[in-house]
Image (tube, rainbow, N blue to C red):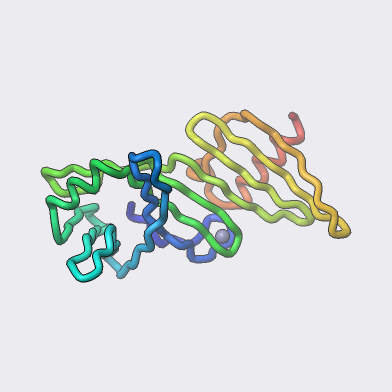
Length: 183
Ligand SMILES: [Zn+2]
């Protein structure tokens, strides 16, 4: 939770952080809510009510404590929706999605979460790697564009290569290249 606005692992850009809301009602579509952050606080409007008061959530991202302007409506909101944090770098298209957020309603804190799915884009010389990892496995796509012709190779079901295992981008690239050499 503390690294909401840390620079992109791959390109150093500043990712856009949203709350992804999936309504439990299957007929409704999933959507993303913009989060506005200061040094300590992140504010999200969960439900915009025109002519009434909107439902807002405020998160202190140093302590993970949250507050809302209407606790009763917030409880209903939690029953109706599942919420995840999404970090998307618009520069290189690297994406991280958290696990479903769990709210401790007694202590009013958001329980620690981890990354559930990530897709990292890495530029390397004349190739681009897309490294997609979930809890169980990693899939890698290597694409080349030569003379404006796109070609791609796919490697599926590799053992997980999450970003958290690597100090930096270069270390991950080296790991991928070793991997591919022996696969
Ligand atoms: Zn990036």
